[in-house]
Amino acid sequence: MSEQESTSIKRNLEENGQSSDSQKKQKLDVLEEGEIVEVTEQVIFNVNGSRFPLKNVEMLMKKSKFFNAMFSGKWKESKEEEIKISNVFARDFRLFLNVLDRKECCLNIGNISRALKLMDFFDCSQGMEDCKNWFLTDKMYPTKQKFDLLTENGLDDLKAPLLSQCTLVSDVTSVLPEDPEKWDEQSMREVLTFTMGLLGLHGNSPTRAGRPAIYKISDKLIKLNENIQFFEDSKEKLEELLEKNNKLQYNIDRLEFSIKKWRKLMEKIQEELNQNERVEDRDAELDSRRTELQNLIRKYRTEIQVYEEELKDLTEAQVLEKL
Image 1 (cartoon, rainbow, N blue to C red):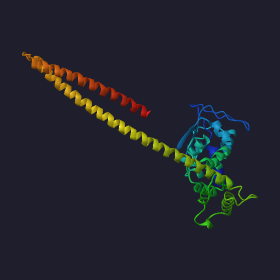
Image 2: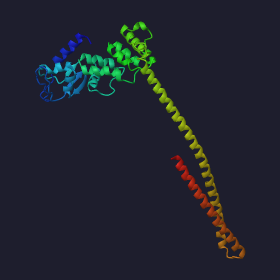
Image 3: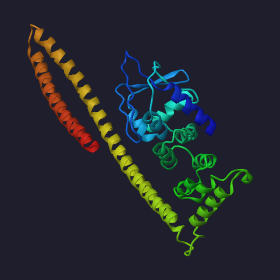
């Protein structure tokens, strides 16, 4: 925004911004220069038709010299209920308030330039610092995009700190434009100086600047190899456990099959025995057959008990293997 637009909006605010009526009893105290105003009720900003109720006017005054001058001056009472701002878009004013309130994730690659202009227009030094700090703390967007925005907004002093976060030459060269003619001399100098330092070609010691990057890469490679070895060892152990588990499962399945088989035989013999008991003619042959069947039942019960005990041991072994 130009100085003429800035003067226009300030004049507009001075003519329309004194809001207080008898129903709400809203009061803007007349203060000496440098004092903080006390606002007993919220102030409503009307930004191109969008209303923004604001209770924390003191925060706005502390962070913005523009609004500090507006509320600290002599304001005449009027019947206007809202302070009108017409030279700013509603979405920009919302962005301005969010940055001042330090809302998380309100800044991104698409609105940082607008936020910088708003902080400059409303004369907010802390908000301006927060916007500048975003370039150095953001990890989401590529360095090239942020570097180009620094050039567009004239923030050359942040280029060196931004480049200092790069540890590889490829990271630095990624900010180079396709057409070098479109780049300013200051940007080219910053990139060239930092690249020379990263390669160890800058300063009294030819390897002083490049060694930290090399050490970082070496450390990362060592840690990567350690992780690979760990996963390979873990894979071998898991394969051994899987093989043991397969054998154990086979034995369990075999025993369960045997138990089912013997149970069916026992049920069949028991049924035959019951039929024999209902026969009235109990001659020696039937008694002998009954005795034989009873012996078979005892034998099968004993074998089933043995199989069940073995199955129990194998199941417990499988649980221990998994642990």
